[in-house]
Image 1 (cartoon, rainbow, N blue to C red):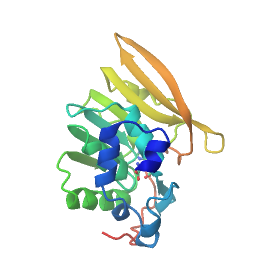
Image 2 (tube, rainbow, N blue to C red):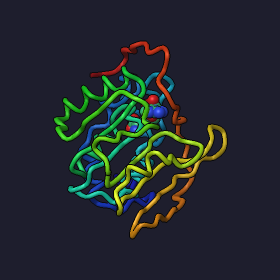
Image 3 (spheres, protein in one colour):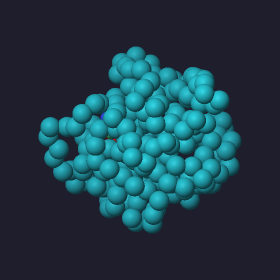
Image 4 (cartoon, rainbow, N blue to C red):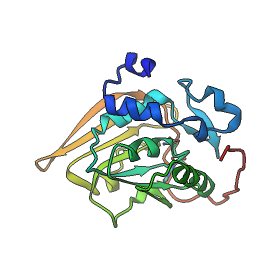
Length: 211
Ligand code: SAH
């Protein structure tokens, strides 16, 4: 955690939760010993688990508390979800690869995260029933801020999302709503897999994960 602190993560609750959440169970067994390296690692279906610094920075940017209801788009390995779940009241998370979602759900059960509700689907369409959300986090990059998601945000809500194309540099954006207005901030450059609308046609089950 010293490395995250040195890199500018100052939210003690985020640091404490990252310290007590095992990261090795979220990566394929072959990468276990590298799970804390500050790189994105493959999790199957050409997707990646975000590097620890990016997870910490995005979580910190959300300014979470235990009353918040959070929507996450892009469950992936479920690592970011697990960190969120330990800092808020409830997380709703959507993933478009069924087998990634199934593996993530096993990890939520293993960690006894009873406040995660997950769903297979296209996150670009949002998840309207539980809305509004106090916080929304998108862990895949869209060409522009996803307007459909902004509409699900509570009046004093915060949305954090990487924005930009696949090859160009992406920027981590934070949108903060207050008093009927929204303010946008750029938090730095990032590199995420693309947010892909729709569902995959082929969805083979891959079995190379430790749980
Ligand atoms: N937060 C994840 C990292 C996920 S990588 C972690 O900690 O492991 C981004 C994920 O977004 C991928 O799993 C990808 O399949 C998913 N994704 C991309 N487009 C999506 C969409 N439209 N709806 C839901 N999930 C999507």
